[in-house]
Amino acid sequence: GTPGTRTVTTTYTVNPTDGNLIPHEGKPVIKPSTPTVVKVPAKDEVEYLKEGDDVVKKTTTYAVNVSTGALTPTEKNEVFKKDGAKSKVVVTPIHPSVRYEKDATKAKGEAKITVAGTPGTRTVTTTYTVNSTDGNLIPHEGKPVIKPSTPTVVRVPAKDEVEYLKEGDDVVKKTTTYAVNVSTGALTPTEKNEVFKKDGAKSKVVVTPIEPSIRYEKDATKAKG
Image 1 (spheres, rainbow, N blue to C red):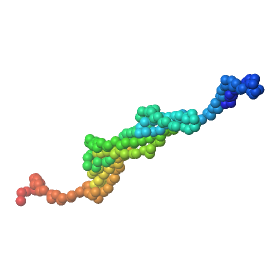
Image 2 (cartoon, rainbow, N blue to C red):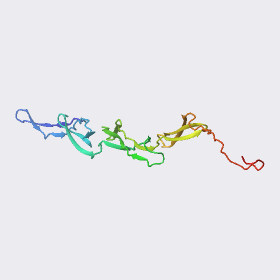
Image 3 (cartoon, one colour):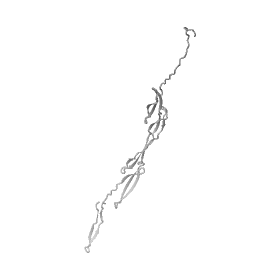
Image 4 (tube, rainbow, N blue to C red):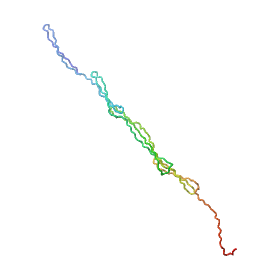
């Protein structure tokens, strides 16, 4: 600031008797000073916090003591985003796969039996922290939690087929087995032939003697007896 002044003018008269001075002090003339101003840094402070699921704006203001310059803080909290920092849970279903199995108790072509599986889930939880400067959310994606599905099982009738054949003189056993494709349920046949009875179908020849029969005929060239 700038200093001021206080000006006092004293005038004198003379005592006619003894010559002494008689002072006469005038009215003071005041030129006021201007104060020295100290600017105390006291900008409001804003901080963003997470409280529960909410984003909270915390504002700290400062009052300055005009005599000492001391700062007195005052805090104010207000909800900036209601539920803005709530965790996000995403559940994705995992559909059951289909697996085909061989049913060796039923003949090919009979109705299939389906045993339904159960779906699974993939759960991802994203939590959030708050950028203290601007209030923006910082996501933190958790590790997926997998609950596996159980497969749907389709039982495909594929009982072995047995047939007996004649090959040459042998009785042959023909066995057809089926392999089931676990992904599509398609059947792949495999045939196996084995001799069931060697020469079991050989032709049998039976020769039975036939004795000559007797037939009598007339001989007209000879006399009786």
